[in-house]
Image 1: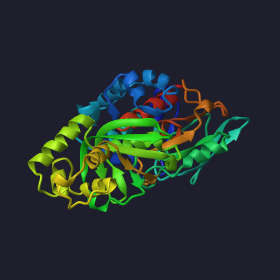
Image 2 (image 1 turned 60 degrees about the vertical axis):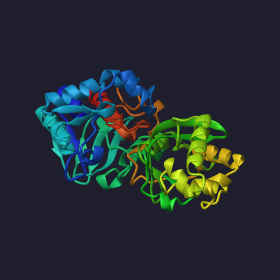
Image 3 (image 1 turned 120 degrees about the horizontal axis):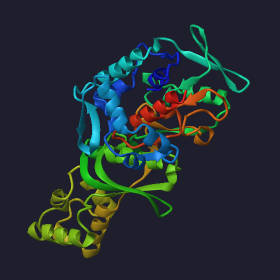
Image 4 (image 1 turned 180 degrees about the vertical axis):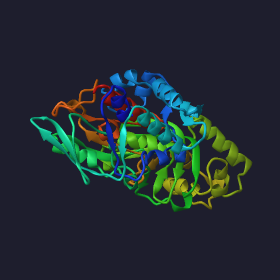
Length: 391
């Protein structure tokens, strides 16, 4: 997008790509279908940005999702909008998004160099002098760093952009994984593979609620994942996790009084049965042992033997089941990188460095990130367009 926008203005543009093909990361987005943007207003888009919302305001209005969609369709890609306003190619092939961007670049004369790695950016008197690759030297008066972060390093995201930024004297906000699963201190092996829908997960630090959201949660071999957990990871990834506690509400549709009435009814109907079997009306079988252990109730206890205070503990466990995070999963699984080039050092209208004339940064290499739903790719398109168009 940056190359297209710069070339459209009549500049001579060379796009240098170290991989054997363009847009390698696009191929794996949206499970290979590429959720390329979100069909929403700039304000809605900004409300889904976790870090850098204020900085992105100009870009969000300058090149909003409707312009991304119009751009794609103008260059031959048919689009469709799915649940949550997520936008996909009609073909369901992520490769068609890459082909469209490549077509657009070629239509305005962008020269593409594949299998070529940028080694360093040359400066002279606080301005760009040229680019050194493993093949040749390119003199130039502007360079746009659009390298992404360090998530999914197999796609070529190996942090090169951070090195270029530091070489230019920029400050880095330490990169951390975002939109990623959370490893737990306790092993929930018998719950592995269980997906819970419409549950609420709350993150607290020092008795203060950081985030509370509803969605789908999946128990895995390492802890928890699923859409709900990925979103929450974006809000806790810069905190000391030893100070964070997660609370899972299995039954957000019922308050404590309603839940007590439900338990009393279930217990009355099946009073001679063991509690581990009666609880199956409320929870998947693989979760029940952990809830009972927390309440110190033996699984074989008959429900007519459950005391009132034990029932109160059960209700508390169903509404506030504690999960202790150990760490986030790594960059190789993270959908995006949070952190990057310090935003105070970048002009938000043009994406140009305030330190080096002619040096621009766009996309994930900046300290900007958002939730899932096409918002991170829209950040890339908006900032890429603003950078290229400013030259």
